[in-house]
Length: 248
Image (cartoon, rainbow, N blue to C red; front, side):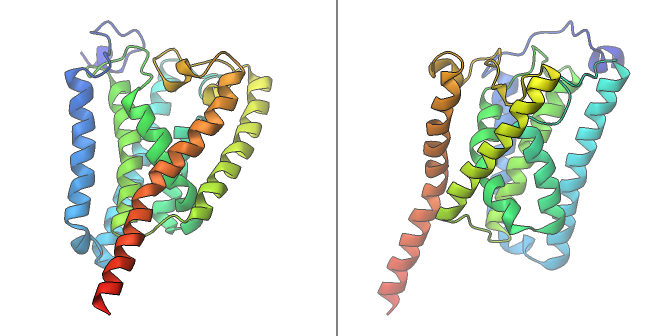
């Protein structure tokens, strides 16, 4: 049974988009985020705050170390597939550093990467068919889910807020990173960031034209997504100003 759970050759039921397992895990992630919001005052206490942040960071480290052990044991390592260069991989690494350092600079672009890119991956995951009876299912959803939970924590508990300028910083950082990854793809023959071909699962890229035009289309989609992700803060600022005027 353990061989089936950790093995490379998966023989169980294939993963289905929006199946009961998929919806359940998304509901659990949402519930965790809601609990953070409801108990954010309690989580502000210095000792609890530090333990929670570090606990999330160590969970992210653990799930990622377990993944690379799985890759090594199953002899699957290759420079074209297993370098941690996809957006969600870098978001995970950045989130670990953010949780330890509380760097606002990292938060500025990790907020948008998490609320747009990581959430999109949770909704349309690329799991190569692996379902809830396999380790990779848990690695994917725990890793991606913890990134979102961590950003929600930093937003509601530590009261970090992105700025309008954060949107343009994120666009710049994302494009510079894409150029770097494009060079790595040329060297390794990889498809990191899916800029050489579209992912095999259903995604928004399917509606954005053929290669390489979908890459240009994604620039506009990313900008719109970042603006939508920033919208709650615009509403919050306006409501705060409105209450301040009424209190005068």
